[in-house]
Image (spheres, rainbow, N blue to C red):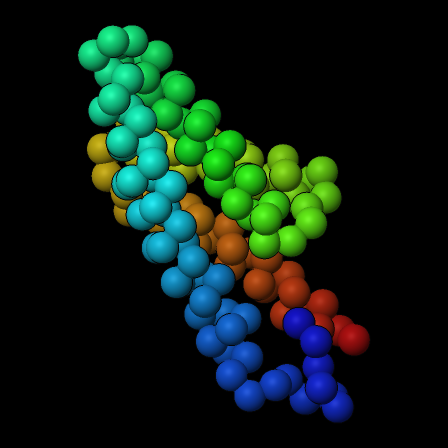
Amino acid sequence: MERLGGQLPVGWVFTDVVAPVVVAPVVEEFFFRAVVLVALYTVLRRPCGKAVAGIAAVLFSSGLFVVVHGLLGELAVDQVVSIGLLGLVCGALVMLTGRIWAAVLTHAVFNAMWVALALAGTALT
């Protein structure tokens, strides 16, 4: 978060808090888990079996999740690892619960942690 003349820009609450903590987790989890993961699992379930289909769907949706985040900006190795692990955890939650909301909540908490760290860093400078 960059301050302009010592002040946070107008609209910072939406762009730096609401968007990453509320909007992004809902949109991303519905796309990567409810669409990509479920579609791949559905296609692979009969020919490969439930276990293989589930593992493949989680791995593929997590990999795509990392790639798309990489397209949005250059990622350091630690970011690739943390985003990849987030994708794996969220995918596993969807497969284990059959619901999307645990993944959305996990993603929101993950993003909120980074927003809180950024805000703390901004306050300290």
